[in-house]
Amino acid sequence: MHVEFLVEEPSAEAALMRIVPRIIGMEHTFRVHPHQGKQGLLKELASRLRGYAKWLPDDWRIVVLIDEDRDDCRRLKAQMEGAAKAARLLTKSTARTTSRVRIVNRIAVEELEAWFLGDPDAVRIAYPRVSGTFERRAAYRHPDAVSGGTWEALERLLQRAGYFPGGLAKIATASAIAEHMAPDRNRSPSFAMFRRALTELVGA
Image (cartoon, rainbow, N blue to C red):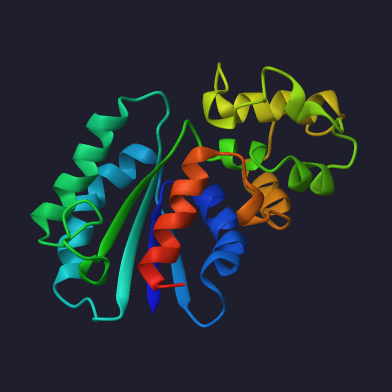
């Protein structure tokens, strides 16, 4: 099986390049295609999927990953599903059986950085000066419910430990933390849904 990932930006690409092999195994192949932000991906999504639909091999699948960013999840998911429908590609929501699914739409709540906060051990391995108990604080206890912006919360956490005084380097941070993430211990519900959908997609 081969999986094509369509993501918002290079930081998501950096993370998935490290996380995906631990989910689907080395027997499957994948590529990650970053876009120029969320709106850029959404704007191009329908036409890109129509392009795929013209030649997509039977053993290829597509995963679209977008940050919630405090948008209405139902409306965002409907937009993603609509693009797939326009391309006549069956999604996890519309296919009758898993074997007929060609595309999976997933939303990171509220942002991809919630997935990093969902694995405190990976954060600490990448950045050893981070507090050994930060995940017990109310502000970080529920990764998908962090208030005030997930990447901002991660930035504050790292800056308190003496990292990135000039501002969070998103690609470098994504690479460093994802390098140590263990998919089966992540506390982010949206990551768990992503992992489950991906394993079902490839039959892992």
